[in-house]
Length: 342
Image (cartoon, rainbow, N blue to C red; front, side, top):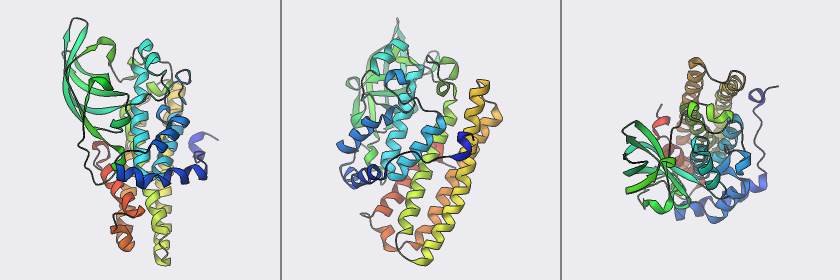
């Protein structure tokens, strides 16, 4: 049986799930993941889901990593979102200069994050770049060791990374959900960047020989973010099902069934694309469009099921201190990401 036929649950013990959830309210109040949550993340190497094992990473396949991200989002939205975005940025080691990447990722707590917006400018000066710009929504800003950013150069768009010491963090994350992601803005002002700090996120530019770096980043991002919406929606259904009313529990069961159907289709498409990549070394446009389409469909169904249930959960849904309200706010904050606007 292929991995995309069975979709096993990731092995996160119940006691660890309970421990992570105990810190969720505190993380929301303080506006950043707690030290205890971060210690667990570092210990389990979740920021390094797609980093080579030789650099201390888990070196997971895409289906394995997405399953884990879904489960973390089911545990808590801010937790899952932060791991997903930071693990996605740490993936960029696969496109960096090898020697530089090996040096940076020797740190067990290395954590990259930043923005995909092209709101910076990089001017070539000899073999270096003069970089200036401001970027929004760097998830996990307080604990990032390096910031990634897209800039317009004379050669077109290039991605850059900067050590934390080169950037100024702007404390402007005021969203009503995903509060503990601390997705703050950052800026640099005429920073001199070495040429090795520039990289191109494309299969042909990979510097490490692992299939994950040959998987197109658009579909990687769509799938990982869709899995977060799925995980948060499942959390919402769990909360709703625990509110007690038999009529509500029946609605929740029906919603869970509908969500499980599209979840299977999503993981089938994702697993098939991964197996095609392993077999052929690349992916056809039709395969990629199928992953994109199932990612969008999954998000659409998950949101609709949550919206349909919300009027039936009573005042618990409107209580800003309740778990189900936090999950609701997280889902519809995540929905504003450009790749999740279906």
